[in-house]
Image (cartoon, rainbow, N blue to C red; front, side, top):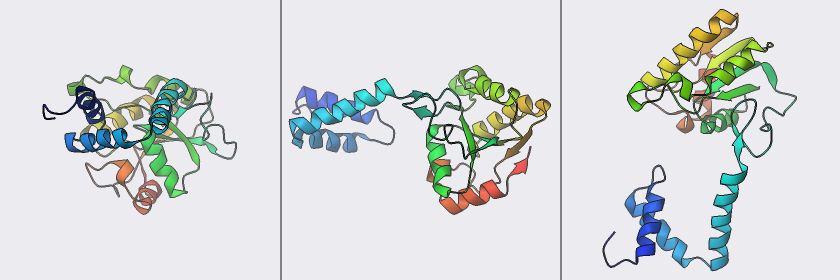
Length: 200
């Protein structure tokens, strides 16, 4: 930002710019918007940030974000517990739930294997997935990582660990564009990808 801006405004802009998808121009607009808000609105906004950070944690079963012991999906007795859909991050669950077609459970890895970025298998929530499968009752694990090099490598690695346990491992069909992100896919594309999944 230019030198004529007040230092607290510069700092606020820089903080907004740290958010994904927010450039410096957008960050500056957000910072100036905050300055136009009432004190009460600013306090509510700040409190919402703090509350979310303090109260939201990982579901003890699927590693999704929740403010309860179990997330609403794991806590839903109508879900099919024999199928687990493995995704990269919690945003992907939201994408699948929008289809209204998938009735199984999920497991969030919180990343993908990427040695170039220093992300190794032990950095992901793979152990807790294996524990769920070994506990019994799971008949199929759907690898729903993004169709990228890292996504494919992660899916292959997890499949190698699960297949010897006698559980079917499938991969989403490539109705999804290669290099695309699940959170941006439309409902029909995701449903078709689920419907046409292949065994690994």
